Length: 198
Image (cartoon, rainbow, N blue to C red; front, top):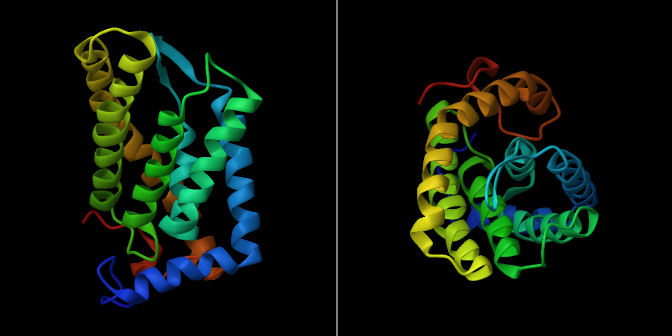
């Protein structure tokens, strides 16, 4: 793994853009979209426009493989197909933007990077607070006409409580898949095929 391969280099974005031209990556992204739609069926309602879902596992996993740029398209298709498969209220493009940003952020943190618990936690923190709470409450306010803070409190509590749990689940999933993914050259070789703490 090249230590100089970071989001601040042209090589990173060139490699990420190249994923858009690979048939196997496009096929993989389609599988990720399909799996996310299926997993989305099993979300648990908590409060008005607030659900508990485990789609983040498949979204983060996919974004780790195909990166942030293909993640943008995967995120858009994920939301559109998800709405068609099981519509919930009216279609709202804000949720499409949230889906796009979620995939993009996971890609930024995980694509071609050394996977660590700290990196997974940070990616989840940004998605949970920035996308799920920050934007999610704005979309709820626009759709349901109640104040931003009405949605903010429930969403903040839910996302903060779930943050360590989601990080642990994501760590377990990726640790189980790490040996297979490195042997298949889908991700860079990790130290002893183990996810480090930092």
